[in-house]
Amino acid sequence: MDPDKDNGQGNFWRQFGKYSHLAFVLPGAVVVGLLIGGALDRWLHTTWITLAGLLLGAVAGFYELIRTIIQASKET
Amino acid sequence: MAKELWFTEVLNNAVGPAVTSVMGAVGLHPKHAASPINDAVAMEILVVLLLLAFFIAVRATLSVDKPSGFQHIVEMGESFVGEQAKGVIGHHYERYIPYAMAVGFFILLSNLLGLVPGFESPTANPSVPLGCAVLTFFYYHYHGIRHHQAHYYKQFVGPVAALSWLILPIELVSHVARVLSLTVRLFANMFAGDLVTMAFFSLVPVVVPVIFLGLHLGVALVQTFIFVMLTLVYLGLAVSEDH
Image (cartoon, rainbow over all chains, first blue to last red; front, side, top):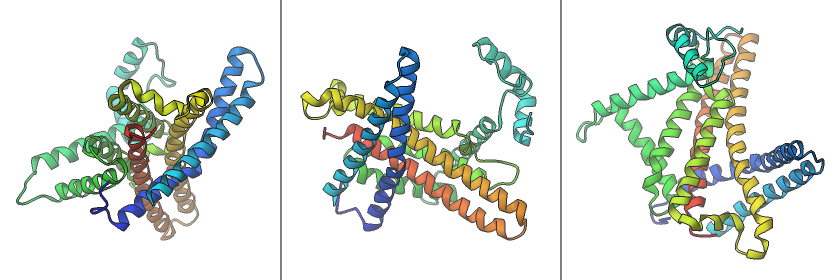
């Protein structure tokens, strides 16, 4: 990134774009984990992978959330 | 069968039987054999045709001394996307601008089509945003692999080898969640925009819908920007040197 040519307005739009996905990525990861777990349960005739997938999805959502915040704090 | 848009009807009359036979040849059977093209696909075709016409017009009138209005629009878009890409990706950002511009123009025109009476936004159908999101997903992974070669896998296992068994499924879910996030945001916003405009148009057909059309215009622009921005962010992460 070239800070000399970067302006405040451009930075605002970038931050806006980056943070706008946080609201969707947390529930999105939970849904993806649930769907993958459900599909594996149907395939393997088990019952516990849906719950494990749900938990994995929640963890993945928080992981993405924390990663984004750490990156943003490095940039500022 | 629900009433289709006039453009869909024209397409189905012109190429419907041919499409049905081609689909049949590859083992696919449309729900309505007489009209295999639905409104979303027809609107996508229209968007592609409009973009082709637009870029042919830009190419035909390309000039350094006296740039046309079309050329100004494209240069403005390129400059804006280029500035964002430079900030997010850093060095060698130029390589990714064509894709970001193409997906941006496609989504913008698709979103704006809903403002024209007799047409609807193809992005208000979940399959269209999903297609764009899946394409973006493969595009940034392709560039991640191209950039890092075999070392790309390191982005999925984290810096601590002992924890890689835990990080790998988390990373995989978070990457698939990006597709879902891109899809749901674009689809939900455009669908809700269309629905709100239609609801108020049926309640008060004068003046009030204009406010919601203005809102729809704003949402169309913002959602296009967010999709392009996130594409650049994911590309930046895929080709970054930090693991």
